[in-house]
Image 1: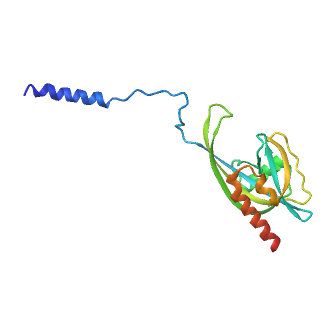
Image 2: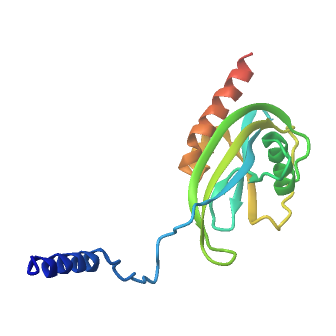
Image 3: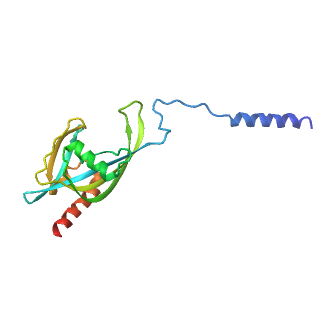
Length: 182
């Protein structure tokens, strides 16, 4: 019996050695362990009827991409109110007619501008608005927007730089056409 006891102790000792944690490896670029920060924004696809043609407003960002006016929702704002405020801030257009909600787009990215890199899960709710035929864009110069252009509706998909917004633009076009027929 005494010969078996040391063997049992030895097995227990080996078991503890096998259950020990492996040393952590430190990598230069470790994957994010935190959950992404959630951001909610709102924006609009704006059109006007100018000399019998439908035109869609596009904004050009500093990185050269063409998109629609949008921005972060402030505390207590509805999505529509946030979209109208952001459109006014980014374009100077104040007189808009609300037409319809278009839906939303969602994506993830890594924010590297302020402090350490952090993952962001962003959702942007879009709405369709009509601007007066004489609407002019006045860029504030502080929103990261470098240019604006009213683009003929038949060139809108070729102008849009973000494919995840094609579905929203297509819905906007269907609603504009339906409105013209009624």
